[in-house]
Length: 128
Image (tube, rainbow, N blue to C red; front, side):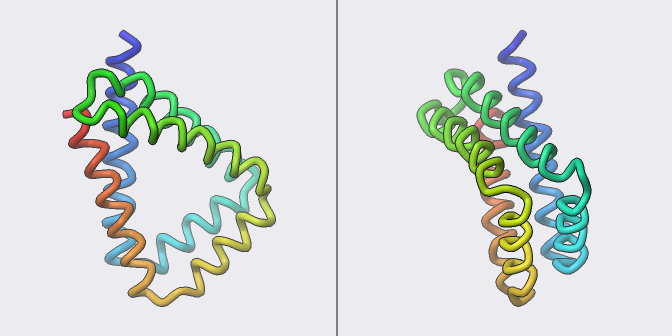
């Protein structure tokens, strides 16, 4: 039951990241604006941490039955560490990173989003 729920979570989060990255490739300004606006809201930091905690735990749980068990487990632990990193960095530093990212050229943002699509595709493929 827990593995099934974790499988569904990895699939849903993977497909969501894939769709958001694809949207950002076609409209990088609107995606950057959406993320920046979300981080300006009181729920932004909580959402960033909670999504990382859920994804990290789901990756660790689903790792043994995935196509890439070691990679999924390592990614799960790294994602949990990233959740702690978001907390440690704090809202102001995260905003500065987002501001730096927003100043990048559209081509550079698209390149980063291609990496996001590849990562999301890897997650989905790994649990199929």
